Image 1 (cartoon, rainbow over the protein chains, first blue to last red):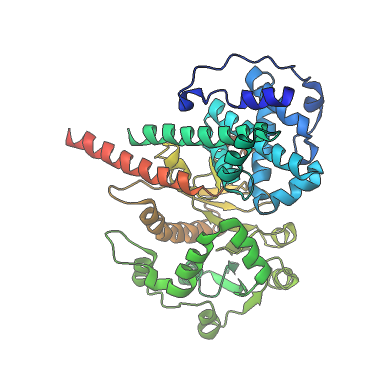
Image 2: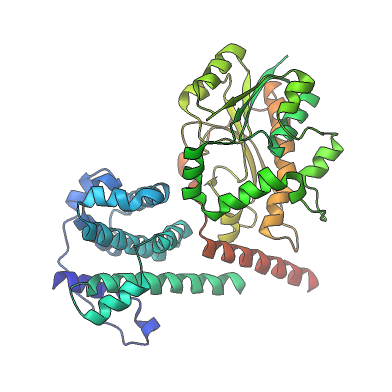
Length: 178
Length: 273
């Protein structure tokens, strides 16, 4: 249930693009920040659970300097290690599905971070992550949503990434050409 | 007489041959040139993974088309600068033939042959005209250091595609070049000189980049001469003052082009009114 709720939360902000009514506010157990605050920002120090904490942290707007440091370090890591990212994520998270999910959720965090601060470097890395083979696939989104199985949360996260990155580009396009 | 060593990304680099010729014309002694070998499969793979098809375009332009890649336009290109300064050398080997400057070929600019050469020639300065990351051991044996001309305004725009990034961010007055020392960070070394480049009407980003090339060559050589004559001082950078940028995604590049066009039409409208 918690995973599904997290995925549903991933659709927050996308309702307008679907022509849907606003989703009700979802209540999450707020994971403690203390563990993450005590860690040095680095991809290697990141657990799968930390990504959700980062996202909550972003929306709570506390300790912003440390959050900025985390976002900057993760963005640089993804940029520099793009060509071997899937291999590195697999070594880090031990399973293909968790590695895939972690990279997706990390991308969602970085996209949210872009929407908060409008630092275009974060949209840049999200667009590259979407291009990265196997991270986001329209075919698998369609298949996973049709099958109504356990992969729906991941499909929704992918959908959010696609819709919101397009929305970000459209917003930028309007600003740049006006 | 002050001595410099030149680092070159490949034997056909127009930038290297132009800068080296101008240094010689300014009375600077070029002790040696270290050049990366053209064929290096592991480097090629690494660069392809980083740049994708852009690498192929770069190779086509820099190694095959070379001077033919430039078309006459309404602004000065590096070819005009070469013509105005009577620069005819088209490959680094020409300096060995005509000036007896030793040219060394290496797989990377961090090879032991480079460090040995630096220890042997003891240059006052190394001029970096491209060729990848430089290790600390090389930096430590380069006299005052390794000088680079960066196609962006430091300290704000470090890293890659820093002509496109300020335009995308609507910082149209933040386009320019910086001559700085290299250190272990990315474009974080001491700054010697910065120069703003004003955007011109009806130019694309690709044209802007071409227009910036001769400006870079001239500023690079002038700053080198001024530094060796004690006329410019090192200005340390504040790491917090700038950001590191990476290769821009093609979708953002399109927006960056659009941003420049919108800016130019706004400027035209203001002047019309």
